[in-house]
Amino acid sequence: MAAKTLYQKLWDAHLVDALPGGEALIYIDLHLIHEVTSPQAFAGLRAAGRKLRRPDRTLAVADHNIPTSGQAGGVATIEDPAARAQVEALIRNRGDFAVPGWGMGERENGIVHVVGPEQGRTRPGMTVVCGDSHTATHGAFAALAFGIGTSEVEHVFATQTLRLSPSKSMAINFTGETPQGVTAKDLALAMIGQIGTAGGTGFVLEYRGPAIERLSMEGRMTLCNMSIEAGARAGLVAADARTLQYLNATPLPPSEEEADGLSHWMSDEGASFDKEVGIDVSALAPMVSWGTSPQDVVPVTGHVPRAQDFAEAGRRNAADRALEYMGLQGGERVQDIAIDRVFIGSCTNSRIEDLRAASAVAKQGRVAAKVRAMVVPGSGLVAAQAEAEGLADTFRAAGFEWREPGCSMCLGMNNDRLAPGERCASTSNRNFEGRQGRGGRTHLMSPAMAAASALTGRITDPREFS
View 1 (tube, rainbow, N blue to C red):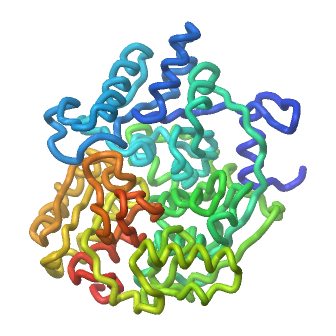
View 2: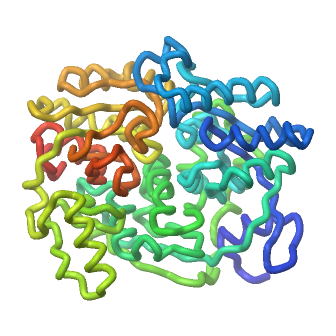
């Protein structure tokens, strides 16, 4: 039998039928939903008189639109009428279609890509979809996980299947010893900087090598989360002992039979990939973005590039526009760039490990006088653990705002937004124009770097606080 990649195994295990034109019908094991991309899909079910095919394989949370303060006041506290209507629709649809999950202010609620794994709903060998591009996060569990559109959400609601074209497979091989202070976020940014935001288009990425094997599950989720920023359909990490250890600590630990079968969910020795990329982590420093694309990255020890530094005309033009939007000239020393805001949170970096890393820095000083810094845990359970460990107290004592769970400033669909011209050190995943608020300027970085930058008022190498 020919050796197979992990992606090939996942595809083959879920293939229902081959369709004309190269498409296929695949089975979906877990459908995660939230308030933004589900209302129209539920409306479609009602209009067609259809039932939800598998409520037991559906899980709902409210995360994008909810405020990160005053959640005990309920949906009425959501100021924007459209946002409030979406959250109210989710409540109604959950009741009408018997969808399990949690809502605003409930202890288990939180960001969809934090809640799914911590509840043990994301498992090796699964297909996982959600009407959200960062569903790739769940690939850390050797699951084929990807975002879908609203019409596809309705298709999964009705059939528990999805029409899909197969992707090519790419191995991203991380070699070498990871230096002190270099995190999973830095690996993700370095990877995107190397292959570009279109480098993964048409591919499913599998992250491999000793540096990946050493990553915690939280770190693997961070890395897979940003696969979409490289243009990929999904990201994958093979299942191993770390995967099992994480699952055993969830409310749904695997059975003995399931645990014994985890070793299947990895690429076979000798499996052939369509493309392979190598990244030497020993040469990396903590990374930070300078422009308006996740591929616009440099080491924190470096300088902002000038537009003329790029050989290709399209890249030069993009850099020129990015520099203008970001209020930079090019050539600045990265660590001389002053910031106004700090955001620690998002589905990329809001788990307990992220908060521990940021807290370890925060306890060494106070938030700079002209900086407003906020920490938003990824779920109510993460918040409770952080409070029990004293992390929340550390943040408050250092001058950070300790918020309630939600997507928050990652995408500016709630009250947490940048004002025009404000510059933010952010642990989120996208630095597009206006992503965190109209005219806002975003620099992507790790939680430790964000915390360090909060204390100094400028982009700062976190290793100064190690």
